Figure: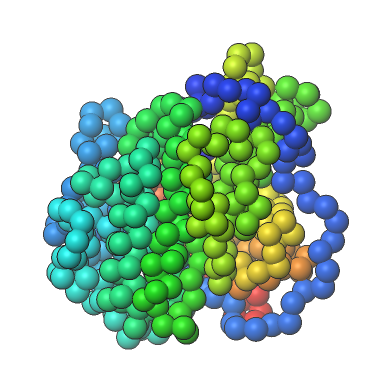
Length: 474
Ligand code: GCO
């Protein structure tokens, strides 16, 4: 999630009303405890990847209406007043985007399939034209020596399928996952089940900044459990169709949470509560540890017999998305916490502070708590404001400096024992950044949303060499 400061000071103070339930001892959130042993022997080559998502790059043509279409069409929801009608038209312009990436030495592309394109109008038989489009996109990657990594769910939900307030969506998502893996499983080796349920819960159900726009503590808790359940059921459906050579993972945020004022008891307690909601309420049950003690009473009314077994899933790898740490403060009232500004001393991108050491921390924490296991950074990226990207931004010195720092931080995690196997820069091209519209530009390739013109930023040409500098085994 790049977005914890993405809105105008989002406050999570309205999210959770039962302080006691979330209060508790997750103190020292994401604290790293000591060295983790020697670096692993090199295995596969380190993956030089880029990431993108269907809902942020494809036009609406040929697919059903989605939750994000409804949100984008609601006045006031998207900060720059844009919609996702065209995005970057990846559905028709993919070939030339892929040519640029191939020429730059990019070896893997993390894409997603759009559920509203596969099942536009309702459950049941898929839309063949949607499956054919993804077959063409994947083949275009393979022809260029770019390995497709396919995320099954990256937030776009067909309107007919409802939302994560209801557990019914989990079965629908499993059906969809079965359809996609059945039809495309022959040509894709690496699959990612679900992208960042933590961000969906916090922003889509807690603060209301993202689709579907709910702002309620109960909605947030429902979204956590029903997404966890979805991931478990989707994984089972995908495994039933994928060949044994395919690898299946899933992607989470691992976001180090810090008290705004270190050592201030209220802020420390607030950080512990946020850590449970953003991190361990997802990762603990995934890895068979059940819900964390501080969160379990809150979610208990939703948990049916067998749910925790369904959620505990043996994946082949974990995807970790990281952009920056999250700072919180304690506030009076039943919830007791809200999101705070990052320390002013930190340099900033257009979306968040620059904190490369937080990436090392997040990876070491996930590996020590849940591993050892193969880990990929499935997203990290740097945003500038739109107005600077197209002209002076093409020189891109800030992004190059940022890349060097974050790749170095990832390499330090591996030196500390994390079995880190690849990194996917967010994003291949500038794209439609959810509620931020086109204002925040992450791409290695610049896109002018008015004309759809493309231009390479200098970071595109340098990206592969920078990865090699820090990971000589690529
Ligand atoms: C997320 C999503 C991406 C974002 C990216 C930048 O992390 O929020 O996976 O779709 O666009 O992170 O905010």
